[in-house]
Amino acid sequence: MKHLFLLAFAVIIFTSCTSTPESNIKEIASNYYKKGAFNGTLLVARDGKILCDTVLGYRDLQTKQPVNDSTVFYIASLAKPFTALTIMQLKEQHKLEYENTISLYMSDLPPFAQKITIRQLLNHTSGIPDYEKEMAPVKNLTNTQVMQWLGTKSNLNFSPGDKFEYSNTGYIILASIIEKISGKSYADFLKEAVFHPLNLKRTIVYDTTKPTITNRAIGYNKDKKLDDYSILTTGDGSIFSTAKDLFAWEEALYGQKLMSKKEMENACQPAKLNDGSISNYGFGWNIQEKEGHTIVSHTGGLNGYRACIWRNLHDKTVIIVLTNQGDAFPLQQFMQEIENEL
Image (cartoon, rainbow, N blue to C red; front, side):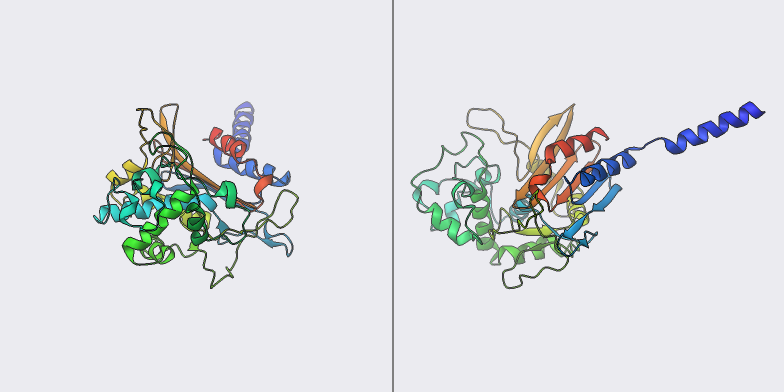
């Protein structure tokens, strides 16, 4: 009897000390925080159930105000899936077609850009030069300035459809098309079509007339010096959000709350190039096949901010990470460690 009791006790002790994916994930985030490599929020979920929702560090390093569940982070290029979504909504409303040329909606385009299609803008195969290579240092850069810059160019980088080349400029043009078709500003259309229906109370497009955002994470570099948000372009960026809002939005995408299953499947199809080869980008999402599973993801980064959404379409696992200590954070390494626990 004594031996049975000791065995049972040992089993209890062993069970209580056995690590779980959830505890391992939290430990990974905590270790990065302790090393000064992560400051922000991490959310991991599977099949709609949150497995891990942790916040670490400060939204304001100077005043030592901590990050909490409602702290908003700049999500940079994670705005692109939002832009692609609204284009797809307009398609479902029969207000555009993916094969329409962009000259149908914009009369002030340079001649070399007029035959580009909406599809080619969505999947970065348009050949439109990326403004960030020349214009990113310009503080408070706007869409108008980017379009003026595009007007100084004499040609595309390549024939539309020939290859994949990431272009922030292309998504700025998509924002203009949304505005032309809807008759609303990009920000107002997103509020009406996405933010309000999903009750995303902590997700906003930055408004220069209301520059103060409550409970906003301020951007810093690896030396913990100010490296804050500085570009005002929309379509490719300018959205602030929280991990929980992004999770609610992401679940709605795959739950057919914002568009049909068919359109979402279109978004997750890699682009087919002119030579028949396939790129790894769909409509606002990177597409990857990994161990027989389709992974859709997108990252964002500007100044002191890094962001990522990752989803396994097979088991509906979702990883969302937001940080305000940009270049201190090894995003790819961190994501791989989290994936390994799932």
